Length: 134
Image (tube, rainbow, N blue to C red; front, side, top):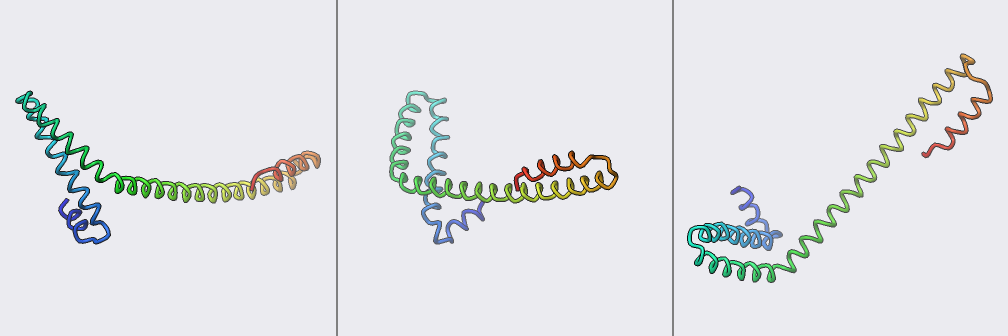
């Protein structure tokens, strides 16, 4: 855990992220204490929870632009990942069709050489093979 904090502190590109994560960590740490107070001393706990809510709204409004950028970056990364996955599936699919076509051609030649099918059946099979997507 300390390594991650050190990376965030030393990496100049992630200074906003480090500050944001520090605020979130402190905010939810105080939420835990506030909820304990709410259980032990309900009237004071409700007051402290109200103050915590105000702090949460204040931090959320100040961090809105950063959160929006973070969200847009995450969505863009996911879209790119799914595009790569789509390309990979298309590549694998076309390779599978080519492999199946080759195996089907070998079976066709095997049946033709053994004269197990008629010429009319061979033409029907050629028509089916030509209709396969590439």
